[in-house]
Length: 122
Length: 106
Image (cartoon, rainbow over all chains, first blue to last red; front, top):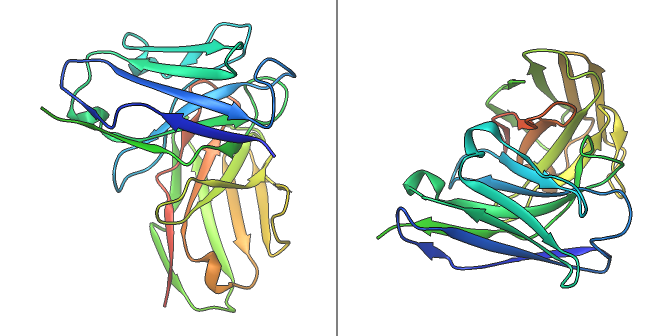
């Protein structure tokens, strides 16, 4: 059974960098045709797709975040990561990692991590 | 593609039928998924391809539609079905979610 687990600091200061890692178990991040994704959810609000990446390809990002976000894959550790620069209070959210299930990025998000709350505050 | 879900809140009793709507600002073809989210939990995939049930999803959940109008139907509500439901289009980038429909016990 595929499992995903987010990890990283729960508190980040304004203007600094948010950095999260998703560790995949029960499957290899470098096999198959699946894309890996980050999604966030501000407290009490809806879901927002941040971006997705294939283990050997270029990532896709939400347009309004492109200048601040980087998603990368480390196949040796079976992990993928999210970096978000210059954070503000508006970036406070639960951050989820997930896997698209199906060939290519045009596939639903079948497997999700439990989510990790990141608060931006001084 | 902007997805608009209606109603915002739906109040029903166990045993009743629930009909949730998701309308897209432009065609999503059939690249439409539905997710269920309970408090403190990650979303769970229910329906993909507009009408295909994900693994392990009970057959009381069904999806229909294509293009710009989609529907999630829960034929007979069980107590565990009361949650927030989101639609998502994944055929165009950026992928987008609707704002959610809260299904609450009446």
